[in-house]
Length: 214
Image 1: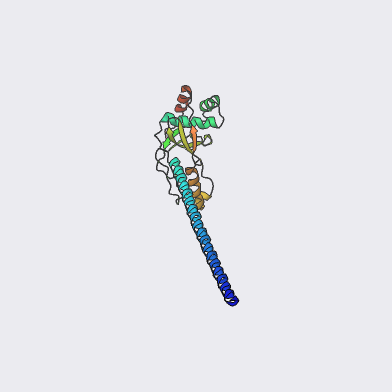
Image 2: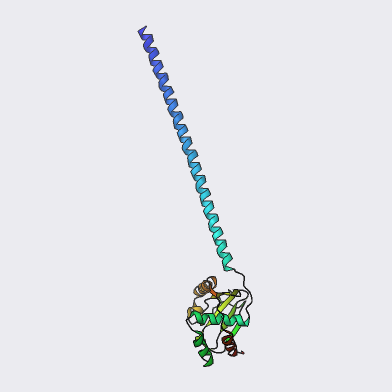
């Protein structure tokens, strides 16, 4: 009788042990499945976040492209004079000093040229193929020290100004194609925005009397 009871007890313990192992394995599988599902969710969220960031960067890039292609309008002679006048005022010259320079012929030969479609490096380096966009103008004086301004009008009161050199004196314009292209891209892609100042009627007329006929 005791032998049968012992055998029954051993069988019962074995069954309980097997049941416990089965339950443990099931729990481990559920835990593993949960981790896999969680990992998939994290991966999916990460991809979604990366996609959102990529879209955001593309939108930002599009905004930059849009700002660099702002529409321009043709410039009149008077507006060209206003651009040159604005340059002198930005450099600290007063109306009196500008008037005196004009009267003493220290500032003379003022000219407005349209340069749309011309080489943006004035052919100093033949490898540079970029050209000035539509409605680009150069206003300058025959006195080289007086400076020049390369610009486009955004509207009647605002100009985009490109920092094109007055003199291409650096020898790399002739000897270094990559440097020359980078320089052109730098000043063409990064124009300044000027709010135009208008000279008085008398000063405007005096500027016009010094215009160059060439």
